[in-house]
Image 1 (cartoon, helix red, strand yellow):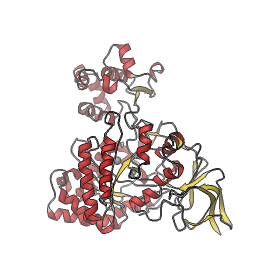
Image 2: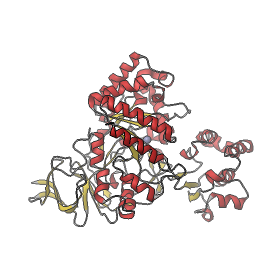
Image 3: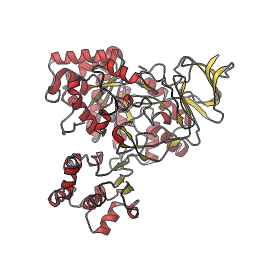
Image 4: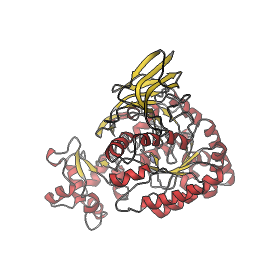
Length: 552
Ligand SMILES: [Zn+2]
């Protein structure tokens, strides 16, 4: 007697092998039979005319905090994602002493654009160590989680405020090694670090104060467990990225560990970035190093209003400072002619034409209908103002609630991106799920892979695309019983329609703690999602199943 049988589907098993018609039998959370499965089951999932594939694995997320109140990491699960890896980019919520919480919350707010209420209103901080955090999320998981531990928080644990001031002493490095070992024993899938991020005061995050001997010592501990080092390199500069690839490769070879870096973007302004990066990656793999570049599938679209700080202004420190202020002060600054003059001057002699002209007014509650869908340069011209000034004035006239969209700011040329995603050494990921929630929707990249690059350009076959986000991901990260339809594997399964799988429209919702806003997308073409053998999502609705686990 099976617990469940998925019947009559087109099985795409994750290995890359050709799809075949068959059934999948599930018992006790595992796949126990494949092919023509005879016998009874408590539940049948009919999959005629549908693809049956291993659940998708998202290797680059920041669901650390959301998992404390939403064990499904909505809407990731409804897109067919059955395992997420949070804790990227040097930041995790453990190990973290009570006294340091505010510091790390500040970093999450700055780097991942999370609202403060997300850290104060929806859960109790019951933990300090990694095992305690694990226990806190495990109480109600609907999705599987393979959490990274952040270098910045380990450093903060050992060094306190000095973590953001100086290099570590030999004794401190040993203490960090001990703490990393403890986290890996408690279920961490690896260590994340960052070479680029800053905190809310513009100061480099703790991991950036590490000298090479510290990173080397931590990688030695990863080597004891064969675990992953994830890092954010200086991705805006190809030469610096290549230097990091070399450094990661040396660490990979010396300690026999996998390493991965993200993001890798394509941009028509720097068309040689990806080819040069990949050439170096190929050289290093040929040496035996494992240095996996992570690439997202979707183009870069950023939305923002002046209601809150945004990634869009990252290179305009004055704007960031002003938009970070409480509403009253922010409004006062935006109404002050001297301040506005300086803000506009920051854009240079073109008044923001190059950076802001292509922005599109996407709406917002107060945006006048007549300007929705128009570009800022058109609007600015009609108003006789510089684009940056028009952006400020238009926002002021409408209570700041005008949303602007910077569309296709990179990674947008399908003919270029398809072959890059198909490259055998490109690790598809970097969704940033759960982060940048008011800037863009980080969900639906998996659906987009199928709609654009399998059905659309045909750069990948169905089997290749499935393999890239299932078995290949599991292998890269050492998740031994995930990512394949095979006997003995965990029954993480997604049933979808190959003809319609895709991502829905991006839309704002107000479902964050404290009614915070975020952009989300629904999925298209996903019928059923099983997590460890339980139906977690079916026919457009989440179930009550809490079958997710920390799966490392
Ligand atoms: Zn990230």
